[in-house]
Image (cartoon, rainbow, N blue to C red; front, side, top):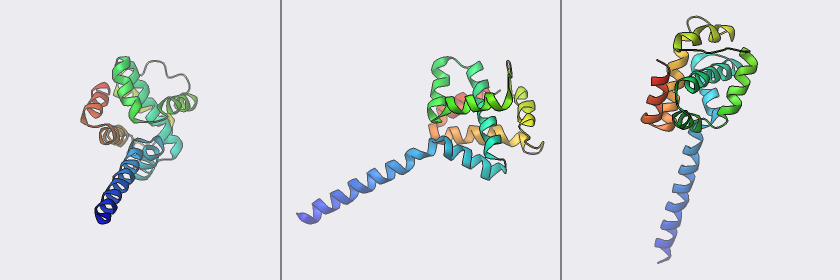
Length: 141
């Protein structure tokens, strides 16, 4: 009897531990860290580029759909605010091509610029699932 209780307790603790570990996948610190490592950009460049991408998504999507994306990235409103401070008044971005000069303004090199959007959409898709990832991809077309 005590063996079964111990096993059940072990399984419960293991489940809770694994659930807690996976919940950090969508964290903004994880996203920024992933971008800095995979793209070789600074944290400031990562914050600015994610904020610009979120800004374009907000322009293109209704509030409910944008909220699904923003909810995958804890601190997304803070990221957008920091990006606005870094980039100044961007006006309407319009489409994915409008992101290129913003990334350039952040000092992201020309060979890295085409890699930024796919890296962010992949991260959002992994953190929020295919539906949320596809919402972001559609907004950035």
